[in-house]
Length: 327
Image (cartoon, rainbow, N blue to C red; front, top):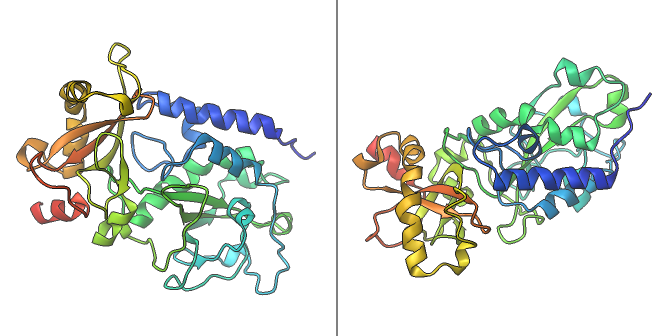
């Protein structure tokens, strides 16, 4: 008998709970929250990029659309390989279980890139019917976390920003015929509107090991303003968070006075020292850099970054480039 799918309201409610558990929790995020958001770091199970609960919920509710596996030029799921790029013509294809369109060269405009392919593990492959949309979200971390990080060349403290991950499965017809392959795909989203996919004309393979990877990293110009690291900035994410102690919560940082901001940095910046040292590959006090903390919009979560010396003007490019020169 086909397993009954959860209602749209149930899925939406669970996803919202996952998101808020993550945003308000400590680095020991719950298993539930980890299962809903794509991992990019050892301490954080977060969206690869900034995506709101509303946007994620919209994606979940769009999963009913299915491709036509009789399209001209259809490529069987079993024939798909890592390192190929794909075009998305309508938004529903972004959220579909399957994608059987022929790949395109990665130097041509495309919206997604296959980072990994594999066979589903036994606990997922022996079902008579494909998993539900909710289950698909829940297994995303297990199937795609490490393969994706390896594909983009991410170190333990590297964050790949504004890139989401899609889990593709065989079509219903292929599943009924015994196909059990899966694909982990990368899709670049817009900084201002995460629901909009951006086109690429390059591959993301090993991108974080290259200077060009700066445009896929997250940086700050001040306490709260985020930009990609190819833009002028003063600090760069080291993919680490911590909960703000209850006695320290002072409200949204956008309303901080200069005195409040300085007081925040005085006690919060040292919290980031260990993870900044891990990012740099040496104790931060042995480098020209310094740890700098940032606050989530609700003022409850600290996000750690590595910052340039206070007297240095804002600079474009990732610290990764400078880090290699010093190591």
